[in-house]
Structure formats: C-alpha cells, structure tokens
Image 1 (tube, rainbow, N blue to C red):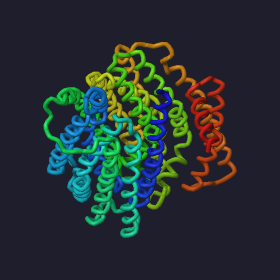
Image 2: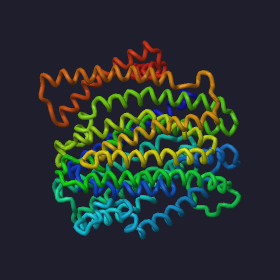
Image 3: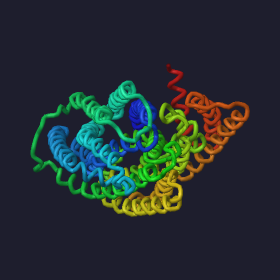
Image 4: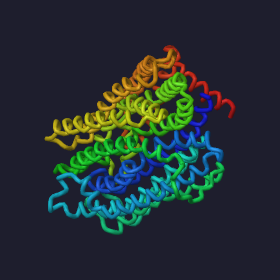
Length: 547
C-alpha cells in the first residue's frame, strides 16, 4: 500500500512539476511586462481575489470534506456511488453559479475590502478604478475554480490522481499566451501604475480563460472512470446532509483563514502604494505572492501529492476504526514528504537571491528583486512547520472531524494577524520591507500552529511505536543545513573570482549550488540513517537504470 501511495504521488508530482514550471514562466513574463511595483500589485490583488473567495465560499468543503464522503459512497452504495456523485456535482455547480453571480454584482464592495487606506485617497481614483475593473474581469474564475476542484475530487476519490495535477498546465499556457500578446501589443514597463481598458481586458480575460480551459481539460476523465456526468437534482436520501454539517466547520475554518489573507493583502499592498520611494525598492504584494509561490513549489509537488494520495487510504482506515494504522500512514507520509521539503527549505534560505533572479528579473523587473529574495528567506523558515501542519489537518479530516481544525485555526489566524500587524508597525518608517515582515509573521505563526495542532491530534491518534517523525526530521535538518552551507560556501568563493549577474548566470549558480549541496545531503542522510532519504535515492536510481 505504501508503494501504491508513492506511485500515485509520483504521477501527481510529475504533473505538478510541469505546471509549476509553466507557472514560473508566467510570473517571469508578468514581471517583465508590468514590473514588480504598484502596477504589478494592482493586477495581482484582482487576480488573487477570485481564488480567495472560492476558498472562502466553497473551497474548504470541496477540498477536505468531500473525499471521505465520496470514498464512503463508493464503498457502500450498490451503484459504486454514481448517483451520489451526479447529485453532488449538480448541486455544486448550481451553488457555484449562484455564488459567482452574487460576487460579480458585489464587485465594488469586494474590491474595496482589499484596498488599504493609502488607495482610498481622492488622488488615487485611477488606481482604484483599475482594481475594480480587473476584479470584475477575474471574478468569474470562482465558478471555474470550484467546478475544477469538484470534478478533481471525484477523480481523487476513485484514485485517479494524475488528471487534476496535469490540467493546470493548460491554464498556465493560456495565461502565458495572453501576457506575450500584451507585451507584443503594448510593450513592457512598470510605469505608469495605471492601465488602459484594452490592457486590462487582455490580461484579465486571458487569465480567466485559462481557469476555464483547466476545467474543460478535466471533464472527459469522468467518463474514463465510469462516472459520466448526468445532471441530477435533489439531495434527499443521499447522505449529503451529513456533508453539509461537516462543511459548516470547514466553512468557518476558511472564513477565519481568509480574514487573515485580507489583512495580509492590505498590508502588502500598502507597502507598495504608501511609500514615496522608487518602486524598484519595494517588496509589496507582488513580491510577497511570488515568494509564496516559490515556497509552495515543494509543497505542491510533494506535500499535496502525498497528502492527496494518502487521504483516501486514511479515510478508509478511519472508517474501519483502525486508529493505529491511521497513525502509521500519517507519520510515514510526513517523513516521506520532509525528506524533500527540508532540503528544499534550506536551499531557498541559502540561495534566495539567485532563485528570485531566475524567476523574476526580466524586462521591467530587471534589478528589482532584492527585497523579494529577503521575503523568500523569511518564508523558507516556515516551510517545514507548514508542511507538518498540512498533514496533521488531513488526519483530522480522515476522521471527518472538521470542528477541531476550525478551533485551531482561530488561534493560528489570531496569532498571524497580530504578528503581521506588529511586524509592519516595527518597520513603519520604511514600508518597503512590509513583504519581509509579513513573511516572517507567517513562518512564526506556523511554528506555533504545528505545536498546538500536535497536542490536539495526540488526543485523537495515540502515539504508535515506529510512527514518529520528530527525530528523523531533526536529522534531515542537520543534513540539509550542512549541505546548504557547502553550496553557499562554493558560491561565495565563486563570487570572489567572478562578477556574474543576471538571470542566466543565476541559473548557473543554482546548478553549481545544487551539485554541491545534494551529494552532501544524501551522504549525511546515509550516515545518519535517514531511511526515507535513502529509500528515495534508491527508487530514483533504480528507475534511471531501467531506462
């Protein structure tokens, strides 16, 4: 079963790798086209809002509650869960259509909610108008995001994990094409901060079309698993009432999380809009979100893949009341994930400058990524606790417990907002560093959060011999720290004899750093007997030999 989970995770990871690579191509093109200052932040906040609202209004239920319910229906219903699935999809599509329509009508209120005081002044009317129009163009993404996740969760419950991870490639291709068209027609540059209406239509509709294409790519796979979609209305006697009850706590969970996101977005946007210094020296919303995307690469490739593959198995074990085996699967999945996430975090901390240079230092953003690198370093400190927390929450969800995660998130969100406000106030005289302060607050928050969640989870899942991860994680951290130090030292010595700069040379630096770091990490892992690392190396080398 462990091999099956790893194989499923590998299929998902392959799709995620390609999708993430194209995602960074999109970021690179966007930075080249509109820079990294206020002009970039205006589009970024508008393009972020639909996903945030989807998660707030429906995403928590779709992402966490439905898989255990679908797995139960597949196991217990005579038709393999087909009727349940069709009713669920139909109800979900209707709800999403209503919510999306309501959000489009409320676009002015929604846009105003995310705008900081610095943009409320009469002199900033043009920037406010741009944000509002972008929001109106992007809000239909809510329906497509939700429908994509609904269909994807049906596939996941039937253990067809690959399509949901591969479909975003189509989204990124469409978005990249829209940005290339923007540059060909309108050129590049971060000034002025405002846009023409035709520029907004091309960027906004291009990104919305990408999300729609992502959904269309996924739909044919329903027939492939024997669940062709047929609209079917009515929820009576389907057991969806139980799903709704579980979803209430999840809805409250994401609501608390989104309050945090609104606060952080406003603080980051204020850091760009509220200072008089040249936009090149600011680390606002675009810098923060780009650094967060970089941090989430190992999360999306490894953590989400393993957690998605493990959740149906843990849900099935929890339904059979096999708590001991749930503990083993959860701990094993965490160890397998950390074997990659820990060195990735160490690498981002040590090599943040060349990483951000490779991704964003083009066109209008050339020479303007230094504070983005600092933001990435601050976020890297929280990647490991964030990963552990992600798995701990999935363990609660396997038991269909959504109340405990909500209560934990209240404390976590309160701490995050407080830390963010304190951090930004501490650098009030220089809001250029707002993104760095917000990143540090995020990392500290998840360190506190993982400790709180661990205490709560121990009451649900008892300690099982051989199912721990703390000592292996510590060993991984030691090996990764030494490997990163060797890689950093190599680049430092190289810098003494060369004067390399720019994205291309930064890519060479990263290649050299990786060649120095990885053998040290793998070698120390073998000495420290970190089995998850050595097993991973063995699996990769054996597959390479077969080829």
